[in-house]
Image 1 (tube, protein in one colour):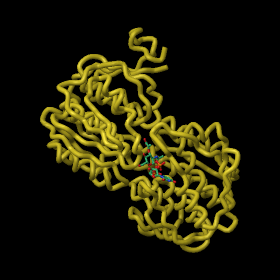
Image 2: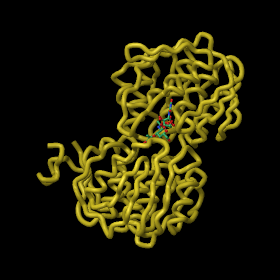
Image 3: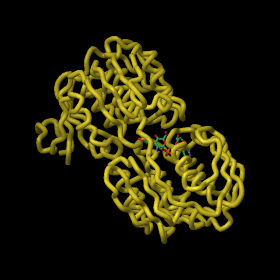
Length: 433
Ligand code: EPU
């Protein structure tokens, strides 16, 4: 198994380009099932999650053609409604197949996703939304079966205890575009990834208004056609590189960092005293250093609030920022697995309910640490970049789900980071043994 070794203490400098957004490309790939015509999707990031999704599409009967440079042509001629467990269990986002299968085939039968390390990941809102669209949903033997013979538009309020749902919104929109009549989707997720999906559907002939806002109006059409569409840049990856610049006291320009996608994060940078300047279209330049930052109070929320997917990485910066910072998780109240590992590096973090109380330490020290999920892995690497000494991050397959060549991109900015076989780890560092 691969591990990442980081020798901390080098300020990062230079320019980096972010890849296509994982969380946009997954529902966008699923959306290609809504038509039998070829769809070309560009800027698809080369990640294990997108590879799984392409594999699932092939298993549904679609033909996929790699056009190179992140472009894929997908033609979903004859497709089937059943999705196997062995693929679904590898990736929760396979739930995104429900909407397109119901829209196109009026039926779906997919294995029910299981548990997840970042906390409770229910899909009750997806099912409630489909029921409002006239579907009959049954859960039996670990499978979700949807009979959409009577699919038709309606008013749907899709909010839950934690606000809107991202993939739930994607599913309902993808079912509604081919439903009879009008759907008004209230409390829709406003994430840029959902707006991108809606724009792709419009390019395929769908009729959607209110894109980007919490009330979407979808007028069902008979049929969709092929399209040629590009996945937007990954705002979470962009935010992670901006943080890498600050935590190392560097000067980093991130291409594909769109200000409007990162509003809440940039406002926290401003509160911290970090300088973020426009550096041409879709590019931001960050300069700062932890010792000059001020502590902040962060609460994660659905977009345009502070994204939960950057909470762990921002916490790494707060661990070396003078003062006491508070980080409250309102989306996944238990998403603090990175904390135990950051403590191994000397961080002073206490958890009280859904809040992390982060007191600064003068410096972090390199240590062997274990990645528990995608964003936790990124947080540990950021901490390693700032730490004194060597940090070894194990289980980095989590990282490869969501960051394209993270180690190489950081190395290009001057980080001392290397991906190695775990046999290279000093014996007392390897915790897998
Ligand atoms: N929720 C419900 N019922 C539902 C669905 C969600 O109560 O039926 C709750 C969840 O428990 C959570 C909140 O609603 O508290 C938001 O969950 P959401 O459905 O929005 O999450 P998701 O669609 O499953 C996507 C991203 C996650 C990201 C969240 C929140 C994809 C493929 N995944 O998940 O990304 O954290 O939105 O922004 O888009 C990641 O990339 O690391 C990641 C976990």
